[in-house]
Length: 221
Ligand code: DX5
Ligand code: ZN
Image (cartoon, helix red, strand yellow):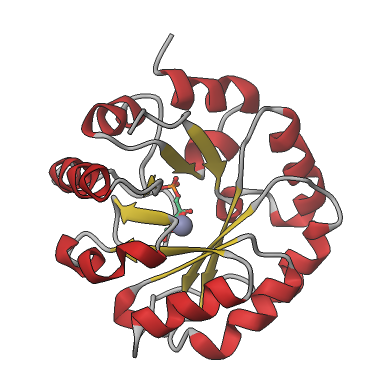
């Protein structure tokens, strides 16, 4: 399968929350492909972020697909609220349970793209029985819960392994990476086979959002 175009999904978690609308407009104008939205419940991960009301408010302001990363447990009772609020992709962790296959079916039934998220310590083998229901596999290159953490290099070998699994399946599944992504680490992930990048600090912490997004897409100038 040919390499899919590289996409960049800035993570809202690193934006200025007093100016969310302006921040979303700014990254869209700067060439962002998707808006990555990190939902945390203080239970599945040791941090709390935001819920569907924020998606609903932002939905009116942008055409970018909403790339929703749920770090909550349980997942199933909240799927329809997030779909109604405007999520386009819904991704969750298999540990959030109880039944990942059922959750993927429920996401597809809501007409959203479905994704599974693998923590640095989650076996790659989790994806094998689920490939026919997956649009995205999201590899965490940090442990989930916080922005601004250092990229864990051992995830590169797992990205390469997943690239092989996706290619062998013949399916068009995006291989997305989340955590510590910047102009240095994105090219390492591209070389390993990734095609889609979440970046919080490297985009919203930059003075020039367009240059930061371009550098992740193309590597350092
Ligand atoms: C962490 C989140 C990430 C986070 C990435 O749990 O899933 O999306 O915002 O932030 P950076 O790019 O700063 O590592
Ligand atoms: Zn995320």
